[in-house]
Length: 429
Image 1 (cartoon, one colour):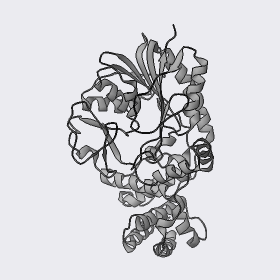
Image 2 (image 1 turned 180 degrees about the vertical axis):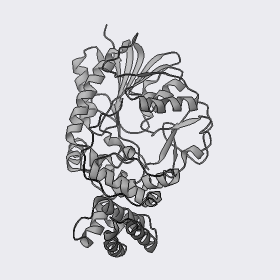
Image 3 (image 1 turned 120 degrees about the horizontal axis):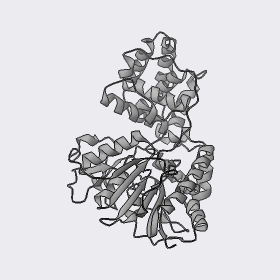
Image 4 (image 1 turned 30 degrees about the vertical axis):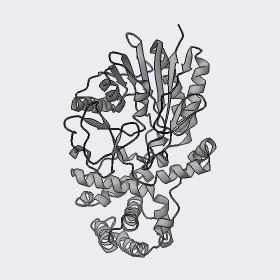
């Protein structure tokens, strides 16, 4: 079941760039940045006007780098801007600053490319002279590496500081600064691709720039991409061959594949047919099997209860900001409140799907206690037959007072996703 985001408000759109310009990754990146900042669109939901997969990949990496360094780009640009340019032009200036000062690209080449893209469009052409002057001054900036790191939005930072302390918040923000590496989960007995770094817990890590489909074993389905922290909830459930297991909000299927690879009889349920299509593709590539159900977990009823249930509930995803740097610019406090209410309903529903004597893992990729510790404390109070079960040794993170487990982005060199998880048992009836 996907997070139920509100539609972005409709705002005036920039004039389109010329027909040839969208093939330029920096222009594509600027359109992504403008989509986030001016239209409230997620990076993953913004279409790119190119059929070139390499250009798309470069554009998304550039856009993410800009969002990770947005405050820094403003420090560099604002002294040279008498007024804010139109959003797409402003975004293009930010992309250029990141390419020059953060990525070390030759300033003349980047400036000429930006100016050329602007001049090629009749409506954007008046900004070309300004962009040329501003970027030449920006390229001479000294001290980029010493500028403060990107801070989380005030409302989120306050909540995290109250929960974890200022030092932890600063460590999390530091972890957000760099692109997330690529972690793989291996099928049992499968050969690992070469060049990866083994992580505690069994995941295999590669640099963020690696081309996943080119790694050995991709076509054979020997592994799938899954953050090291995201792999922990399914391992915590510790399913045995032949057990019936329900994976709620299952797409795109990393946890489903873990459960199926362990020999369980898995039912994977999700609200989104499109996301389930990706899950089906992943199962086909890996040669694993699960029964796929497209339904709303709040309305769906199984034929029989399950030995085990995994609920990866829709959440604010604040634990994944290092790989989704657009989230701080899109999430609002009201979104979290609505998600907490949905999580409560889903958790109550999931508990009812578990056999007496069975077990349930509840997890969210959130750093907020309202979506983790507080949910379990409230569930234990609502359900007298529910209890937390002892946790096995865990490779990352720390125990929480109510009996759960939490990971943070600063828990390992190179970062991991922030997750909350709890293993629950039913002793009632």
